[in-house]
Image 1 (cartoon, one colour):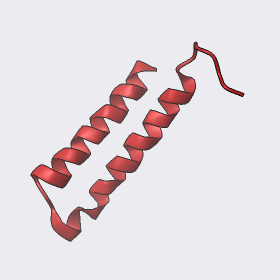
Image 2 (tube, rainbow, N blue to C red):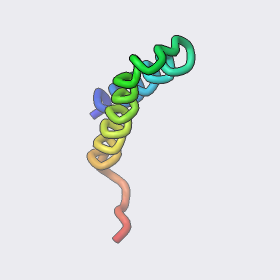
Image 3 (cartoon, rainbow, N blue to C red):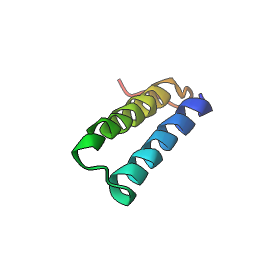
Length: 56
């Protein structure tokens, strides 16, 4: 489970690197898939983290 969180943070950091430090212009549009990957991995980690109380 920690691997999922590490993957989410890593993908977000790579996205920031390629978006702001090394802009690739229109050809780098595929780099934005890293942001989607980061979000998906973070939500997966959040859902599977276990423990704690759940609202509902």
